[in-house]
Length: 114
Ligand code: DGP
Image (tube, rainbow, N blue to C red; front, side, top):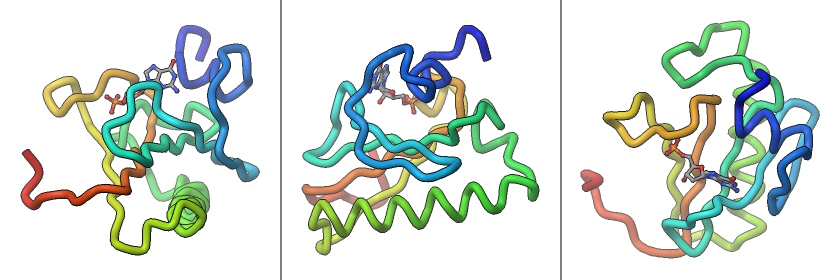
């Protein structure tokens, strides 16, 4: 999408600190980290604005995304635990409307979240 921040990060026209990528998924560090490890995982293609638009056709990309998240968690030594979060809608804190997941780790997390 022409005016989408994460589409621009995906193609490299806006720089980011890339962590890893696969055919369909890019992982890069959040500019405003909420934990010692805070990595964003996005589909390179703008397949959905948020998780509310996920359809079964996105299954393979999502499997790739989860697999990559687990690999990064291992690489970042998050054996104590890590969290994957996706915000849907402004009321839940979503500010970028390109499907993404936050991989958070390196500190304790409470439950339920605040
Ligand atoms: P959300 O609030 O769930 O839509 O998450 C969007 C995240 O994107 C937020 O934690 C901050 C991050 N972010 C916003 N702009 C940039 C940017 O230009 N570069 C990077 N690396 N992260 C960004």
